[in-house]
Image (cartoon, rainbow, N blue to C red; front, side, top):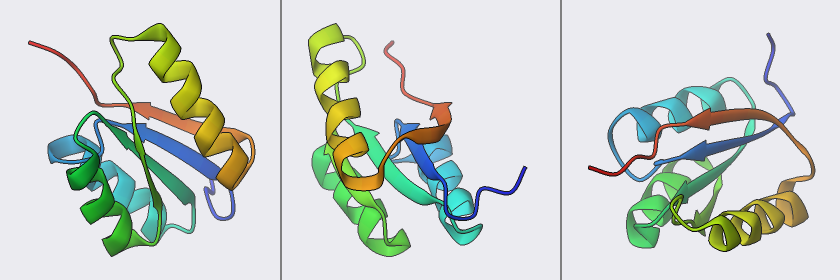
Amino acid sequence: MDPKGHAAIVTGAASGLGAETATVLANAGAKVACLDVNLDGAKEIAGKIGGIAVRCDVTSPDGAVAALKEAHDKHGPARILVNCAGIG
């Protein structure tokens, strides 16, 4: 798979596996939307990789729909989705 030029969504992108995944995708040329409940952390990662940050609480269906719409409006239809968000 060549992600270059494709829109990608990474949940849980503010830290850990999500942040690393977002970085790898961006380095491969994807347009990455960093989704996380921690918007400040998502903004930090997005700033480093040239992506966008979107607040998203994956436990909220309405919030997830709104976050996906925002990512779509900025990057177009996502062809890549990596879910790294979770709750304890």
